Amino acid sequence: MGKLTVKQVKAAKPGRHIDGQGLLLHVRHSGSRAWVLRLQIDGQRRDIGLGSDADLTLAEARDKAAHLRKLARQGKDPIAERDKHKALPLTFAQAVDLAHAELSKGWKEKTGEAFRASLLAHAVPVIGRRRVNVIGAADLIEVLDPVWTEKPHQARKIRRRLVQVLQFAKSRGWRSEPVPEAHEIRQGLAKQDLGTGFAAMPYAQVPSFFAEQLAKDASAARLGLLFAILTAARSQEVRFARWDQIDLAKRLWSRPASIMKSKLAHTVTLSPAAIAVLDLTVDKFGRAGLVFPSAREGRPLSDMSLSKHMRAAGRAETVHGFRSSFRDWAAEEMPSVPPMVAEMAIAHSVGNATEKAYLRSDLRALRFQLVDAWGGFVAPKLGARSDG
Image 1 (spheres, helix red, strand yellow):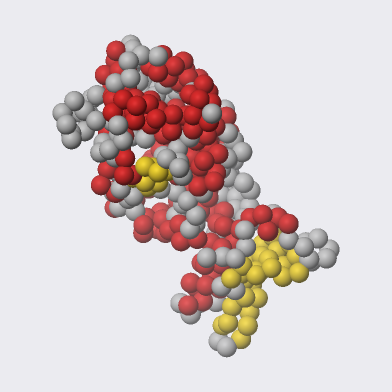
Image 2 (image 1 turned 90 degrees about the vertical axis):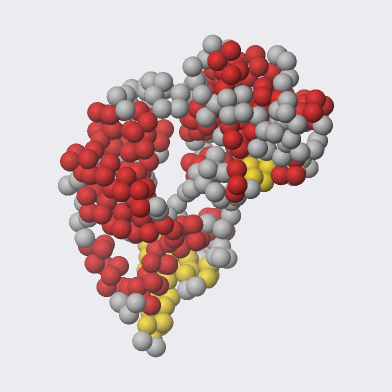
């Protein structure tokens, strides 16, 4: 794990600041700042410039350094390889091929096939010949416009894959411009009909719906629904939640792999509002076994138990759709929080294999900041009651 932090990089004074494994930040008295990778090649020390810290973040510099170290271990000349790629007038179509070849190593075969097929069908015919370094939000909007309202679920997948390709290109030094963010792209497209796929409630309507449900009888299923909204969790994860998974003092819900769609354990950061809902369940059902128990002792709620409260309220949206509501709110109302934080909050995988190797933190502090703000938005009175 690297020694430097993002804060230290920003505050670095003239000198050499070592991150580890040969990577260092060289800050000159003139004010110029550059990442340098120091390697031993054929018994000789080689210093390889990776680019300025204005062009490469700490994570991207580590990613690029890891790539060049790998080339050196394979007996290749990392400087020649670096310069060959820098000189390459890489097109988006070429970037798709390269990104797919590398990223798919960590994916299931079906995921890799879907990634490549969707981009070949929708993106390459439109922007395939354009240089990857100059592609911006307008280019991505051009790709998405024909399917954005007709096939919204598919369109959002294509958007994520477009961004993945550009992020991959940037990490390899083929692109220096910032990658367009989701909210920049959405601003140039029509509002989607959320009735396709997992229908999601517009996030602006969530607080009033939450307040209506909170005012009604506190059944296990209704409290489970409120908890699902505040944690952006899947229905199954809530229905199978147990008290031995929850640490109220640390505000953490440690979910085992057995109840996760990904079959990977995941820890949820809980907002004061979510803790307040848990307090209500303690008052009603005690603090042992299942958090939201069914009437059948020891058995979890049925898979339709949370949804029935949506139908009873005359809503067509799904419980799963609140994950999208949360994600849209995070993108629109919390642009200062990196998108990957929201992805981590809903237990989505983030980054490619190399990025994951360096991303040892689960960004818990940022996730607390995000879910606390979501809880304050959705249930301001409930959150305040929990705090005091």
